[in-house]
Picture (cartoon, helix red, strand yellow):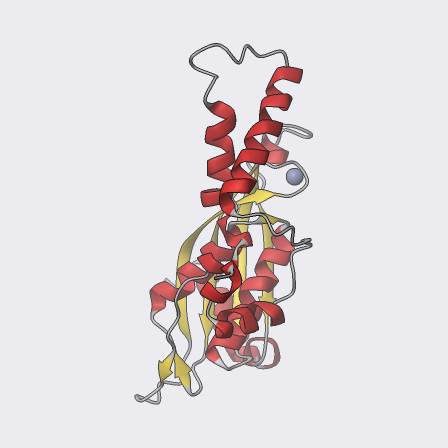
Length: 220
Ligand SMILES: [Zn+2]
């Protein structure tokens, strides 16, 4: 059985419509990816002059490789997309629904160091609703890729529009980039804020300000 057939065709359809992360499919299984990354990470450590026979370091290449494939970059593999069942909006609830303080842990694709932030996500239900934890899971899936924050924000919004069958979606992410904290300007406090406001959140001033008051905390 090919690996692709294990992924729900609906998931593949959704992911094909979300703006893409630049990727070139290489046909490697997870185990093959881990072996190749471990081999190459060993090269990086050796080039840095580390002693790979030291018992604290000898397992690091394999540890890093498993962490990349199974955890921090798991969102590159469609098979790790969360199972989503949207259900009919039987209550006819049509006010803003917000999930805030969603933890966003991602990796900057320019430096491969941590992006650490929080997201606020709102939508106005039309015919479909989903369990609220699914919103966190979608945010986490796209976070688990090498990212730039602007793309991450838009991928989450693209995906929610498709799953919820509405354009009335807003995503705001505030995050600290460790490539700014640890290197370069070494600013430990600055945060980057990105947002993607669609549908009523873009067009309706009242909806927009309701969302922004939740984001800034004045709506608490
Ligand atoms: Zn960076």
